[in-house]
Image 1 (tube, rainbow, N blue to C red):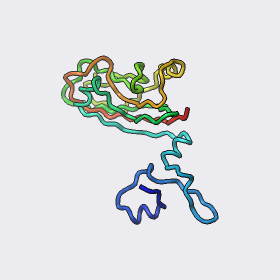
Image 2: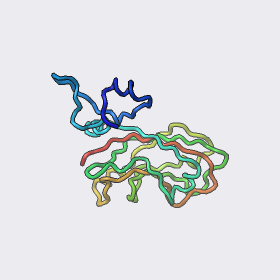
Image 3: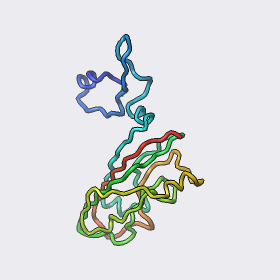
Image 4: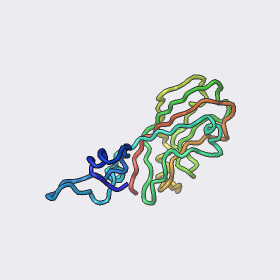
Length: 180
């Protein structure tokens, strides 16, 4: 979608645009003009403003997490990395517990060490908004040869696909995109 004035978005488009599709404006003597070619999302990245994303996992996706990790945040591009700030988990218990291989790991795609691990899938009840914290391994990434530049952020499980579970999971991740 081309950049538009706010009144044009409301007047001509019955759909709600995303903030990423709106170009911020700055006033000048001749009226409002776009701030370069930057979209709202690009401006937020440049200013280090945090984003929050919610990813929902079905029971089928959880049962296959070791084989097929679920991407939470796409790779940001060359010269950038994802800086996770915090995590919130919402586990909705079904009728059966995930009884093996249930330790969740949040990590950069292709990097062995995790940023956060959590045993929420072993619960026998629903858990809302349980906060995860950053692991000290995040500091290790900066000092090691494992690259985090242009890596997606994903959720997986530790040692193999879970078995015998039917709950669902929402993961909320707040993060910034850092220019390297």
